[in-house]
Image 1 (cartoon, rainbow, N blue to C red):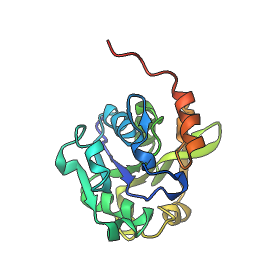
Image 2 (cartoon, helix red, strand yellow):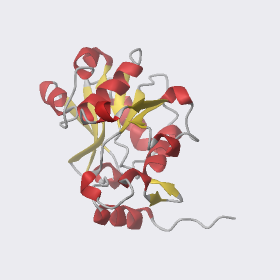
Image 3 (cartoon, rainbow, N blue to C red):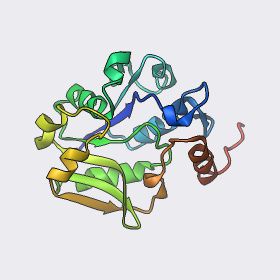
Image 4 (cartoon, helix red, strand yellow):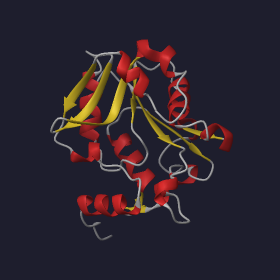
Length: 201
């Protein structure tokens, strides 16, 4: 694929709704963690990847990515919300031809889905994955929206930008685009959807 937008993985939220002593992104998933599985699938797409996270979560992806591909936010920066986290990732890859936003708590999104949405971005300013007509992630933005994306803040993510431009839904056969982890029940549902973890040989 010649058109290679960057996948931005925002992974700096507090995950308060999950509860418990361990962050939702550090929960066990497919022999790894929720965050590491999400990032591994992103890497498997062979598109460039940048993860924006906190010092506490960075080690879980440190074995998967080079240091230059992991942006560590301070607690104060992370508290500025999902929008600011996305803005940081976009600014880190300012020369990219576009960006796919893949939240760190979506470990079932398939590499092929990422490529399908990336391809749609060649024809549309905003594109997103949809499954059976329902909008999901990743959401992708073309390079011409850079100046708006780097001004994002708060917890609405990039919703305001999406509302301002025609957005294309790329239909994919991937229910994972609708499945994230907010609660312990969500995590169990995703584990069941993923199936059993293969035994180590």
